[in-house]
Image (cartoon, rainbow, N blue to C red; front, side):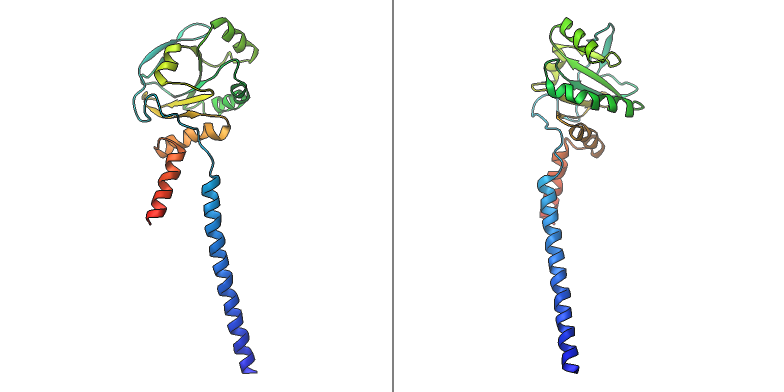
Length: 202
């Protein structure tokens, strides 16, 4: 009887230890899986002003009249959303950009930016209902920031310092610009890479 109890206790402890090993192994696999499918932030193109550097001061003409000052201290941070009337992904993101404009209005101004022929952009602005956005047409702006692909977004703080930038195709990638700015890193990818390096070094 006593031998049976001892054997059953030993078997129970072996089962518990095996379960602990399995849970630890699964936890490790979940961590590896998370790293592999971690949310992709905005893809930062390796050109143009570096994150953390001042943006050159520019006075940009706006559709509808007036100018927009960029690079100087301002009351709000600025999100530049570069788009084109012929870019389908840009059009898909416009409702998201509108929600960001409304939700983040206390600290952020959202500016639409492009270049090209003004009449085409005037028609696009009217048809898409974008009259409430500041909308600048400037070849100089695109050249200064080295915008090569669309849609692209650039986050500039209220002191005129570039805080985040990247190619954006989703709400998550737009949000990653704010996350990178909050974390004071160049991009979410940089932050994830830093965490992996720290984990490997530990």
